[in-house]
Amino acid sequence: MQESTLQANYTLNTTIGEIVAADYRTAKVFETHGIDFCCGGKVALSAICQEKGINPDTLLRDIAAIKMEQIDRSQNYSSWELPFLVDYIVNTHHAYLKENDVKIATYAQKIAGVHGAHHPEVVEIATIFQKIATDMAAHLLEEEEVFFPAVKRADAERKNGNSPSKEDSNVIKESLAKLGREHEEIGDAIHAIRRLSKDFALPKDTCNTFMITYQMLKEFEDDLHKHVHLENNILFPKASQL
Ligand SMILES: [Fe+2]
Ligand SMILES: [Fe+2]
Image 1 (cartoon, rainbow, N blue to C red):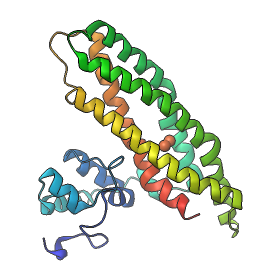
Image 2 (image 1 turned 180 degrees about the horizontal axis):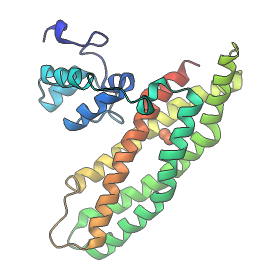
Image 3 (image 1 turned 90 degrees about the vertical axis):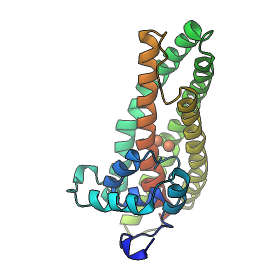
Image 4 (image 1 turned 135 degrees about the vertical axis):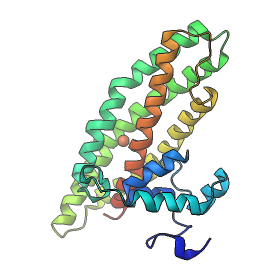
């Protein structure tokens, strides 16, 4: 791999998360190659290429090509002001979770009851998802009641040329570590569901509820990836600099 083929602003040691945070358009490339840019975004480009058996040159060419596409400012998250980014996360991703977590858990329990005997994996999926739903409710509460307000206050202080209060500094520091750990746990859990469901492949002998549950689980994973990407790769690094 020639260094000259790399993008000017990053190297093979740059992490996937950093690349997507710097340019949201590159997310599409990683998705196409089946690379997790959010929960697993802390992995360097070189390591992920080795793990997935992808030629780094191919990946870099695809990234370079997508960077030729026009930038859509409505999706250029890293350029947004922190309070706007926080509100966006709450109004889109948190709203989605509040509306769907319990619904998906109920559906998963239902198919576990009906199909569990022939498909033991769905019993395990229902148990894992129930834990995700419970953990997620506490996680959202901590973000909305504790972390996000502290970030907004610290950002306002910064704009006035002041340092954040000692209390907010401590809250932000502690929350960053805790919330980051929880993202990893929830990410691992949804990836375990993907494995158990064999990438949400529908067995032949199943019903509509089964199909709807798998569709909802896939949609949940999709939303989680975008949500965790915005927090892990954009919001958290900015918050840690407050
Ligand atoms: Fe969140
Ligand atoms: Fe979060």
